[in-house]
Image (cartoon, rainbow, N blue to C red; front, side):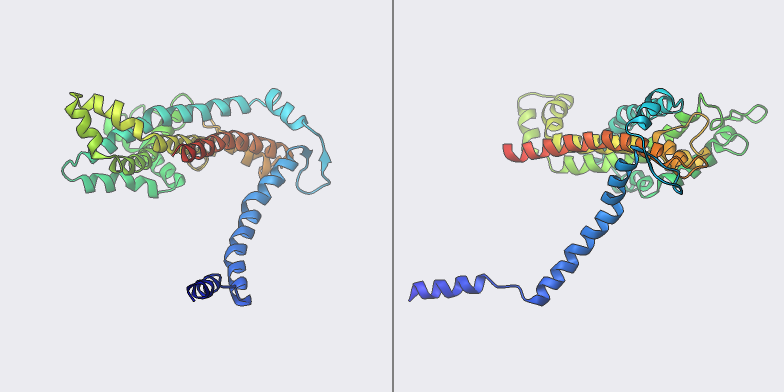
Length: 304
């Protein structure tokens, strides 16, 4: 009797999907997958294939093999300056914005007065696009009507903060770091909230001061957040486009790889194959960091 009851319960548990259920599941899963393939992976694979061709978007496609990559690395003067600028983005965001965001997260996590206000204010730039941040940078650093020159009283011979190639990259990096700091702060703040308070108490009992407790106890527990912040910082550095294009179309000292892709694909040259090669270089570097992150996460799950 009990065995029959168990069998009936098992049959009821293995409910078969009706045709309507399958249609609904197909729509709910199929449409996002198709959109992802059409919008993300389709153009990505097309760029990889086109990077080995010569095509102006109108005429016939000519297969050239690795010629685009050879020209890119040896016979395209804007490429290496753009690489240096992207590395400068990575270094500035990684060595300035990330530590400063961590510092702000630690201060807010301590429960300072008006912490909610500080948290909201510092996070506010994150909701702005980099293009809007670029327009704000123009209002601040403009040569003739900028706020900075007005504050320092430099009106007779104003400094061209955005026009001087020796200065403009640093001004743009400050504006980008202003936005990135808030993002990093929120990520670290979430990680600090998840730290077990007993770890801090045990470190205090052992005689550790606040700095020793943070660097030897708290910071190692933030390893997953550190990996996420690192990957986001790398991607943010490599996809830098909006802000430099909003300021001066990514020229005169603000060249980055994403601007070169745009100039070659939709510019007057219309060298779609060559622009695709630059895009593939960006893709390869980005995927390297993303794959590293995924491997670290998978290993972490196995260790747990």
